[in-house]
Image 1 (tube, rainbow, N blue to C red):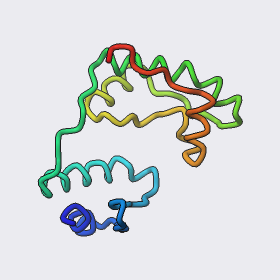
Image 2: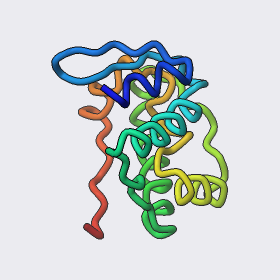
Image 3: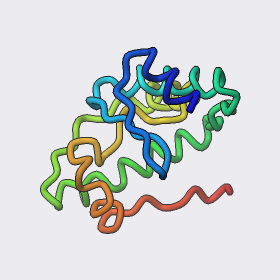
Length: 125
């Protein structure tokens, strides 16, 4: 797999299975991994540009994240302080994976939190 080899060349430990590839990395390296993965997808000929997020969508998602914060905290998960709305929107429109998310403090509980504190689907799609 060209994608796996490219990621290995960039220093990532890649596990290849019948289902595809897997890479475990610390959350603080997420941005570096996303950048490397995007570059490797393009190099492997499977890269499409990441989906774009409009300013309207990013602002809506910020408000939606703030809406679920009390629910997440009621589940015993501490939520880190959010960035400003302007900073969140700017970041998300440049890289469509949010750097702040109410589930961040408990990634192992993300599925449970998504069920108990769901994010409303974007109404514009």
